[in-house]
Length: 95
Image (cartoon, rainbow, N blue to C red; front, side, top):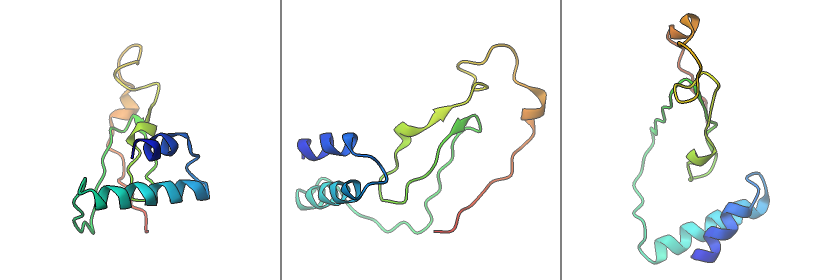
């Protein structure tokens, strides 16, 4: 399993090898009872509006790829811009 995980982190996301290594990890985890699969037809992910995140098309949720914008509270210099205090329209993407 450790070898699969190391390969996973070194493999480009949009490659054929990525899908193969993800499949191997999931099968190994299932065989060794590392995980329990539950149906989840309505997964909802929410991030701060000053965090850029693109969801994955596979079972993994690569939150480690999330990036903060220059207006994120942790690095922003000065007050939060007034125009950004307005609510943003939620978006939904068809599978």
